[in-house]
Amino acid sequence: MKKEIFIAKTYQGIEPLLLNELEELGAVCCEILSRGVRFKGDLELLYRVNYFSRLSIRVLWQIATFSFRNNNQYYDAIYNISVEQFLAQDGTMAVSATLHDTIFNTPLFAALLAKDAICDRFRAKTNVRPSIDKDAPDVQFHLHIHKNEATFYLDSSGESLHKREYKKSNHIAPLNEITAAAMVQFSGWKGDTDLIDFMCGSGTILIEAAMLALQIPAGFYRSYYGFFSWKNFDKKLWNKVVSSAEIKDDIPVDFYGSDISSRFLGMAQTNVQNASLDDFIHLKKSDLLKTVPQKTPAMVIINPPYNERLEIEDIDTLYKQIGDTLKQCYKNCTAMIITSNKEAIKSIGLRTSQKMTFFNGPLECKLLRYELY
Image (cartoon, helix red, strand yellow):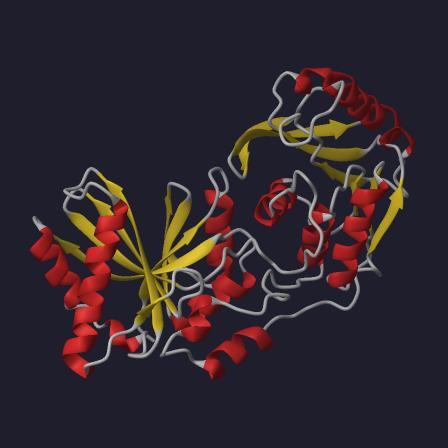
């Protein structure tokens, strides 16, 4: 198959991990971008990345690039793109655009002009034009425009790939699934020790870690991708990709989660059950001060409150309790903590072995590693 150009979008700071993941999935010519990775592959790889990637927000297919100096040239270039190979004449579409220093004043105008060009092409060829559906289009087109250069993309994913669809209940300050998966991978944990989250909230870190260890694809629970509605969707090729997953029946480690809140623990239990991971993830209500590992060494990964969306009366005391618990009860373990509260970090009172900038959604955070000897 012909090698096409794709871009996998992600969060800032995750790009190097995503590049490694894409190469393992078979991508070639990988190149790190800001909040993304450009790579080459065929249609099967496009399906594979959507289904298996734990770190991609969405995957774009680069269909065309062109230069323009005015509205007419821009319109003509889009009019000449063979969009009918993806979009049926009676199908639905949406067009979005991002602008950087261009002749257009607003992304809306650039998108509307592109939409007109696509519709006019269909009208000229078939006398029928596709409809607009901004919420659930059959085909989502996207234009990235910088100065007088434009790149025309197809969005293959539909809804953001962080929506794995195992979550039925969500925490008031939820940890994004991609961020959780990246934390597990940044930790270096290889599924060879127990993994603990004693502030587990809705259970995202535990579920993402269990999925990684059991080799459950990120898209295993997901029912729909954008490319399902494309005119050239290859069902046989998609089934081949899905059937290539090598999911394990059992692993020699366990996952332990606890939370002081019955409400949050109930959310975690709902999500764990929905993901059919009850046999591997063990949950209980507990104050973090009373938690201990079942065996060591173990990996501890937690996402404590930052005092942003979930307010804590005394955040410094809470972080001191986290540090004291790790120091006294988790010897011979490794701990990873993510937080955006740079002042509260100081109350943990432990020396970091690694510190990196990381994003949890829009929040700039620090991901901290502690070796607990």
